[in-house]
Image (cartoon, rainbow, N blue to C red):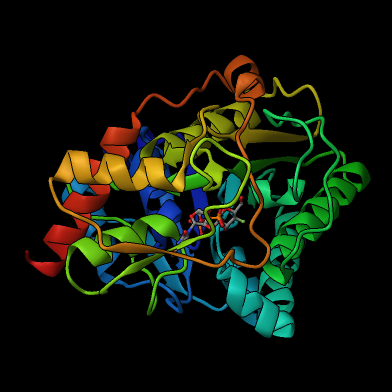
Length: 349
Ligand code: UFG
């Protein structure tokens, strides 16, 4: 029988880690851009109800496979089943920087086995395109700002960060060896914010490591006090500078990356892009903006510097603008408002 829904699809995209924070927002954008999506996730750091929320937003429930991709047998089964996909977006990874320092084997094993099993299956089942979720952490502590993609990557401070750098090198070698396949690595700066519906957002496991979820949980009364890690950096107020980017803007960049891969217009078979706004804000800027936007006070105190933190990181977003036809559009106020809206709805405040 003629299946109208299927005939309108722009083809199937596999999203590993699609129930997670950036993954779920990307699934929404892909569906809204008429791609058919299948999510592979082991639910180790995400919840299955996110699939229902995605359906609430888009009216389409993505296909779902619960699978541990670090296991080669399990990975092969699901990739074989979905070998009709044209692209893989690989979000599935552990991401807690501090935990990775304490448990390096766990991080290298999970993040790199998952990647290797995925590209092995990609080759075996001839899935042409691959997008890797990388991080600005591959630049280490840069001497030149804003950061362009030409800057030499450095050994990252944490095994988490280093797993991203090693993964990029593996992908570059893969692209060199197999001319039929194309890869894009996307280097995220600091993703915050949530979908405007408040139905999906960041769901940290236990006490958050990142600034924004810590701030929203303080405002919600779940946590008592925010520690600001150091006020003696060489910045306007002594706190470090980061390039905070809205997760919905970030998700849209993945759609652009899929379109570029599918179009056949790639200059190189392996390309990297920074995903940031190009603007830097300090930790105190974030706290002040949060207080202004939400009219809630944040209880904070200055604490010692956190090991591994760098003074300042912000992107040159030019390459993504020129070649991906993408730029970040949403404001810091919108990032903070949607993060807070998500926290409130999630906690029923
Ligand atoms: N910070 C605090 N208190 C907190 C948490 C964070 O003061 O409780 C500060 C940090 O010192 C830093 C800023 O807020 O100056 C941002 O910290 P995050 O932990 O939110 O983000 P990072 O910049 O340290 O790390 C993020 C991602 C990593 C990624 C890195 C790349 O979490 O996955 O960006 O730059 F590798």
